[in-house]
Image: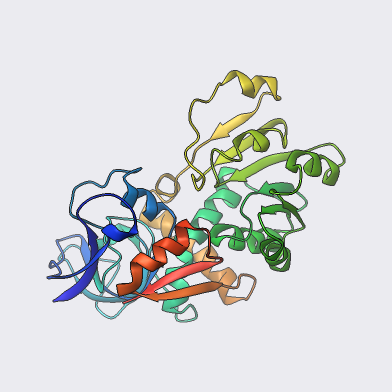
Length: 325
């Protein structure tokens, strides 16, 4: 027997329950992992609340973790019992002592990266990888705008951008978060609660504005993000922290300079085991050589997941938050 978090109805953090369960034996192409640390991400509040309907109820939650392989299916070729692994995608159910998932979702975790680091960084770090290296492949000297620069994804983006020689302008909503983003490598910071963001971007870029905006906030920052883009610039809307962007008038893109918009997701970029491992290896290399520091702001026992979700939804967290089974 093992323990996991599940929910039988959608709603607030109170719907999350700690229950005993019997982990399934891995199928032919599956791997059974004993988690040593579990990642907590904002997308999980969408599944819990029903914004993203779970496949069925009752449902597990979470897609990110790191641990040790306990058993493998008959067709598994890339992993064996005892291997250190991490994962960020796959079926819901990572909020558990033991998780079974398809081999294609796992990556090898090097000894130099701890389980806690792996669980804290996989989803956010792979997100930053595809944003900065694939959705808009940044080059040294580029200037970009990144919203929520002190959050879990933003904290890593500041560091990765600095490693690339990119000037990242980061937004945040408090002096403490602005200071943190600056310390992590942001070239400039803007308080979106107190300052006119588009005006500050124009000022910082001598009127040129930026070729790309990375926006994980959603509806609250949509309009201001478009106003920060140079003609033919790319709006990368990758999250809904303030709510989903809806009712978009495509005509506004022409009015503001023949802009492009994309709504990417990790699964499309990490579409093969080889692509996923390559993306993870780039991330792990930056962690190993010290150019990315993994900031674990809070740790919660698995049994305290309701409190962890309240803190996450209340924007009380910074850096990464992990659950410990």
